[in-house]
Structures are given as structure tokens and as C-alpha cells.
Length: 338
Image (cartoon, rainbow, N blue to C red):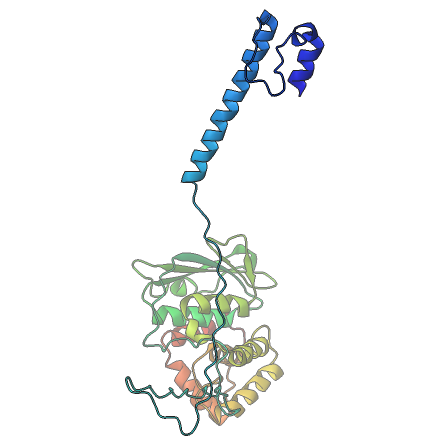
């Protein structure tokens, strides 16, 4: 339409001269076209040829395009009419009897008496792996508040493993060292130590443990230092279940630190009550609580013996632990004050 409008506006005089076909006539009369009209006619013919070619391409495309399958609605299944009592079974294959479905198993509910562990228990001592971590631990030991528990645990670890070295140094802040200090400075040194624990005895308000690799973190206090060494070197001393862990923590709080004679007596009284029914203080197995109670006994004034019967028998068994006899001797001749 745009083309024809343009032709009428520009070439009106030529279009008026186009031959007209008489209505009902059988012949056509032709005339000579002007150059402008020939260009227009040629352009229109090119457009028609392009449309025809496009149409052919569309037809070819439809032939090769994938056809979508028409969706067919599935006829609803007819329900079989109920068989009458008189109906006879058809000859042929015998029908299989319907399979019986077993009832679902009832959920297993644990009785209140059953013990359900809340955490994985540590393996038995025979199956426990030997520690392989290498590090150096420096213990800034307070002379005023000696870390007896950590001292006992380190000597016990040295008796348990053959790759732990223990060294002692005396700091000038604590004054002159005892006369027998050098004799006890290096006890049973390991030839190729995996762990080296160095005690630096000094005048300080509390004990502080610094471990190589985590030197930015200082472990404060005798109880916390012993917890770290137990976790890394003797994890069986720390129960995995919450009740056992809480009980050990209570004993560490009551049996460590600067204890007065009255407080030590209370520790022995509590231990005597527990040891009347078990061989050890927590869960009938050796734990860090046993070492804490043993360390409390070492702080008794010189010449004062343990009178509690159950504690006396337990104490003899603890003295048989490798390294504890050496720890007791070191503490009595070096740190202990009468």
C-alpha cells in the first residue's frame, strides 16, 4: 500500500496511462512504460520473488521440524464387577493369591533402666593409640602456690611414655634455689623426646602454661594445665560422658589450688566416702580426679598421716603408678614447706 501510494504521488501521470482491460474482453492492450515506472515494477517484482522464496523456506522448515505428539487421554480403568458366588473360575492360568503384608514393626523404646550413652566412650587402655603430637610446654610454676597436680601428672606421663622429657629451672625472682635442686632438675631424660615439659619455678601469683604452636594462648591455673596435658597425652583420664566429666571438674575445683588444712581434710573425707564403694574416685576407673586427690594429700603438713582407711588403701595403689613416687619425692624435698 505504501509503494502504491508513493507511485500515485510521484508517477500519477504515468499510472493514468496504464492500459486498462475492458470488462469481459479477451485481449489485453500494452503500452510503453516510463523508466521510473519500470524501476518501480522491477522493485515490486523483487519483493514478490523474496516473499515466494521465504514461503518455500517455511514449507521446508515445517517438513523437517519435529512434530509434537498429540496428548491422548487415557480411558479410565473399568472396575471389575464383584464375582458372584455361583461364578466359576475361568480355565487357564491360576490366579496368584494376594501377598500378605507384614505389619510395621513397632518402634523400640528404651526402658528408663537402660543406660543410653550421650557421648562416645574412650577406647580401653589396651586399644588407646599412643600420642604422636610434638610440642614443647613451658610451665611458669608459682613457688607460693605450687602446681602439685600438674607436677604429678607430668611425672606419671613420663613413666607411662618413654618420649617425654622433664626439666626444671629456678628463676631469680624466687630467691636462692634449694640445695638439692640441681639433683632433681632433670629426672629420667628421654633420648629423643617428643614432648619436653620445662618447669620454671618463680615467684608468681598463679601457674601459667604456654605451649609451642599456641603460644598466643596462656593456660592459667594448675587444674587447667593438667586438663590440657591429659587431653593431649592421656585422654582416658577425662570421662567422655557429661556426668563423669562434671564429677571430675568438681574434684579439680575442690582439690587444687592453695588449700588450707581444713580444706584438705574435707577432700580426704569426701574421698573416703566414695572409695568405700569403688576402687577409684569417679566411675570406678582411673581419672584426673584421682591425681587431684593424690596431690591434695601431698600438701598435708609434715608428719601428719592419713587416718581414713579407704583413702589409705587407695593411696597405696596410687603410689604404684609409674612416676608418682618420684613426683612425691621431688615435691617433699624441694617445694613442700613444713
